[in-house]
Length: 401
Image 1 (tube, rainbow, N blue to C red):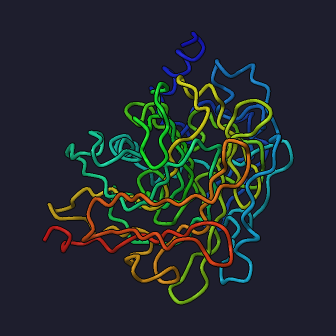
Image 2: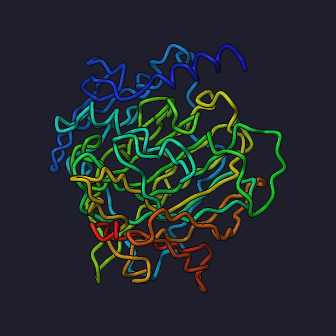
C-alpha cells in the first residue's frame, strides 16, 4: 500500500459525522456563492466546485477535477416509457438553482442528533447476516430483504429505485438501494453464482428515511461508501471522497412527489459505473445525469471491478420497548402484493467488464426475518431488458412470534 493510500484510508476511517453547519468538514462562508431556502425547509448552499468538502482534504488538494465521464451513463429512462412510472424533481429546485461552477450542498438540519447518528451509522454499511457488525450491540440489529447477483466481474449497475414514504421509529432508518461491492482479497477465482470472499469495498446509492441523520421522515437521496465493510469508515454523501461535478442534484434532499398505492409510481434512475477508457474512477448518475465520482484514493485496496451487486431494502430495528420495530421497509407491503402493490427495484441491469449492458439475474436473496420483511425476484420483463425485484414488509410486534 502506498503512503498516499495509507493516510487517505486513515482519514476515511476516522471520518464520521462532524459537527459543522453542514454536518461535514471544511465548508467556509467564502466557499458559498448562493443560498437557497427550499419550500420543504431545506437550506441549500451553492458552493464553489473547487472548494467542495472533499477537495479540502489535504491529500486531495492537488486533485484535478474530471468534469465529465469518458463514457455515457447507463440510461434506463427509455425502458420505463409507457408505464405509470414517473421521475420527480428534487423539491429544492422549485425554489431556485445553483449557478454553473458550483455544486448544491444541503446544510445539516437542526433536527439531527450526532450522538444517535454515530451510534447507528455502523448499521448503515452493507453487511451480511453472518457479519458481526449487524449483531445486537445494545443499539439494535439490521433487518434485510434484498436480492444480489454474483455473475461478475462487473463495471457497474443501473436500476430505478422507488420513492415511497414510510413510517420509521425514532433513531432508526429504512432505506431502498443499489449496491456494488468488491473484496479486499484479490487472490481468488471468481465463480459465477458464488459470493466473493468479502465485500469490504462498497459503494451504494438510494433513498433513506433516517430522521436522526437526514432530519425528518422524508425519503432522501443518499450515497454511501466504505473501504472496510463499515468497521470504521462510514462515508455518507459529501463526508469523504465523493467529488461532485453537477449542479442539478443535492445529496440528502427529498423529491417533489412520492409513490401512492394504486396510483402513480415515482422512481429515481441511478447508475454506478466505472468509466473506461480514462482514469479508474466510479461515476454516479441520477436520472441519466452524471453528477460526480468517487475518487479512487478512497479505497486503500483498489476498487477496480465489482463482484457483487445488491438491491432491496434494509431497516434498523432498535427494538423499542423490547419489541420488534414497527418501522416499515419498502412501502410497508410484502412483495407478494406485486410490482404495483409493493415497492420494487425496477429494471436492474449490470455493466460488464467490456463496458456493455449485461442482463444479470439477481437470483440470490438475503432475508433476515421473513415474518416481517421479504423479497421476490419477479424475473425479467417481457418487453424491456432488466430484472424487477419487489421487497418490503410492515414490521411490528408479530415479527417476534
